[in-house]
Amino acid sequence: MPLEGLFRPIGIAVSRRGDVVVSDQRGRIVEAAADQATRTLAGSTPGFHDGAASDARFRSPAGLAFAGPGRLIVADAGNALVRLVAEASRLEPWPPASPRVAPRFDADEFRLQPLLWPVEPFEGPHEIAGTLGEARGGEGAERFHAGIDVRVDEGTLVHAVRNGIVASPIATDEFGSLNEWLRIGPVTYVHVRAGRTRRNEAFDPARFVPTYDPAGRLVLMRLKRGARFTTGDVVATVNAFNHVHLNVGWPGEEHNPLAFRLVQFEDTVPPTIAKGGVRLYDEDGRLLARRDRGRIVVSGRVRVVVDAADQVDGNRPQRRLGLYDLGYQVLSKGGSPATGFDTVHHTLHFDRLAADPAAARLVYAAGRRRGVARVLGHDPPGAGRLHVPDLGGRHPRQRRRSQPRRAGDRCLALGACRLMMETWNAKAAKAAKEYIRSWRPLRPLRSIADVRSSAT
Ligand SMILES: [Zn+2]
Image (cartoon, rainbow, N blue to C red):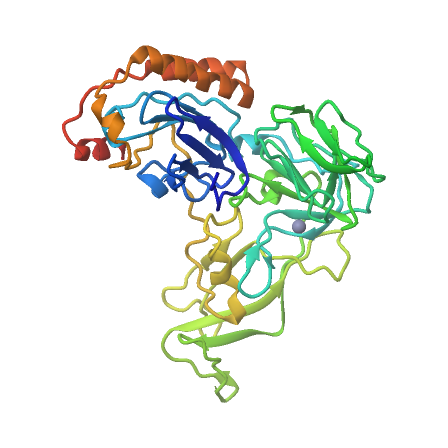
């Protein structure tokens, strides 16, 4: 089946007519039609948004089920919502609000309890070797460091920092490499041997599923979806990278773990600017170096580029960590704020990562283009909004049946509930079932414009 371009498929549904729809970890829902053509029905990158086709966003659409012709139910695990992908003509104008049916990442709730360290002693402190927002990756592949690094020796046991349920069908990856990771709820642990000792022996068969090759070698370690972990449970050992990296939040939009009251973490050390570490550029990125009586001459718009690093209490002195907050203020010769600069103008604040990966390039590209405005934009998921992709012209047979049989719909919808039960739990499945039943019978709509306006 030609399903190229999918990134870790996680859900599949087959309609009575044989249409096959597959979802992937990037939040795309792709149809493989009988004529071998594939096309994206909905989704483009992870997130939450209702809208037509690739404008719509899902976060781990782990379960799919057809609910009658032209209607597809999606268990959007990351957003904890039951959602409907439908032809414009088959969507209710005022859909009922979806129940929350899975654990959702709620930063305020997460913050209520202090964050424990992932290694003993849980109350720390341990050495912080990297912070969120540091520039990583080579030119063209710039990215922000998405969490914190805790320096510990290879073989150290890694413990769950929080109670959690494995929600993703793909909760471990990069087996055997230095970048191996595992994910429980909203927390990801990287540079580990998931579910294995330092001698590579599986230690938790109830929750970690090992795969052995014919020679008896361990070649893969999967984490069961739905597995539950309690704070302090051993989940892995640190690999040869000699540190454990901790991410909190959805992949690509992680929150700063230091903002969650990491126990006994102290940072009373101010960041420092390297000697000669302040440079000025004009709008076109040319270095402003001409001086008049020791002062750099500027005119027009100016970009200020600073080479600075931070440090925290108790760390080895050579650490150069990322900054948390950036800003600038213009002062007069006498040191008083210039007009319009009574307070510091903040340009960047690393509370969480940008949803847009291009933001890293904007901030860190080769000493230029440092003005940052788009870094912290993110819309929290809202409940009960349905998706309206334009499926126009692809299903002539469906058009002839103006009203699908509700009994058949109900039956297929219960299939979706079973999917949800596998994905989450019985309570969630019950809520999903009631929600699907509450959808009103389809009725003809006056025009496509009605549907669009009702769904936005
Ligand atoms: Zn790291």
